[in-house]
Image (cartoon, rainbow, N blue to C red; front, top):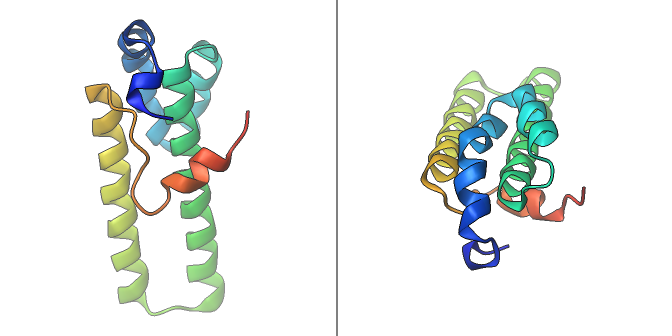
Length: 109
């Protein structure tokens, strides 16, 4: 989905809650409150993709006994991606997250 596909009125209304999509399970709030807003739904999907990747990564780190430095490095990268998502949501951008954003575009709800 591109920014030009979403009318500005939806972006203006969605910015108030879309940023919550990047705070783990708090994504439920914008998903319920603004479920008919395509801007908010876009960011909920991106936040859901990031949450899925985080959970899988944490599970793999603990179960596979990966080196701590590797797990910390990937965690920092995921944190930076999370911050990018928050900034995009606040600034009114419809832009997939780097690395994990394609997963959000695959989600269909």
